[in-house]
Image (cartoon, rainbow, N blue to C red; front, side, top):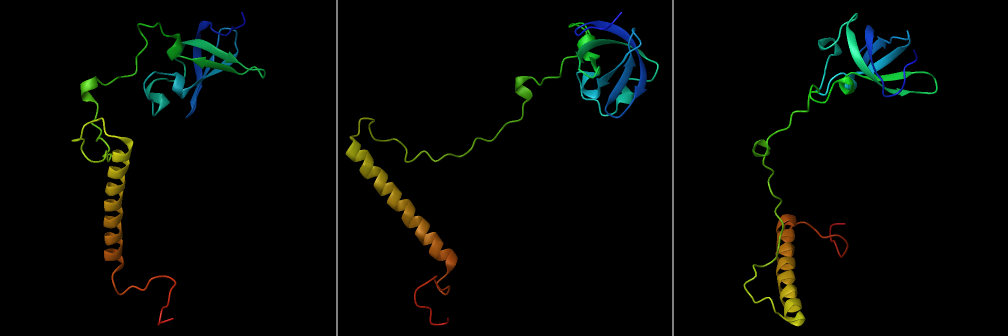
Length: 155
C-alpha cells in the first residue's frame, strides 16, 4: 500500500534529530516530521514530545519528485483534539503608548474659514516654529563657535 498525499496513517518513530523526527510508514517508506509539525505549541526540544519507538498518527503533507515524504503529527489530530495556539483575552494585551502627533493649534475657530484665512494662519504658525528652531540652533551652537564658510579670521 503506497502512501498518498492527505492520508492519515500510523507510523513508528525511527530516529530523532534537532529539526524533526523520522517515521517509518506502513509501506516501509520513511518520512520526516519537522519539529514545527509535531505540536501546535512551541517545542524547544523535540525529545519532550517524542521518543524512538513511539507509534504516532501522521498526515502525509507532500511527496516531492525525489520521493521525500513530509509528514505532520499536529495535522493528523482531529480538530477537537488539536491544541489551539493560546490566545490572550483582549483585556490582557499590553497597552501601547499612542504616538504623539502634532495636530496644529486647537480648533477654536469656526470650521468655515476661507482658504486665505487658513493659509495666513498656517504661515504664522510656521513662522513661529521656524523662529523657535533657529533660536534653539543658535543656543546649541553657542556664540563662540565659528560658522562654516564666510570670513574666519582663525583659518
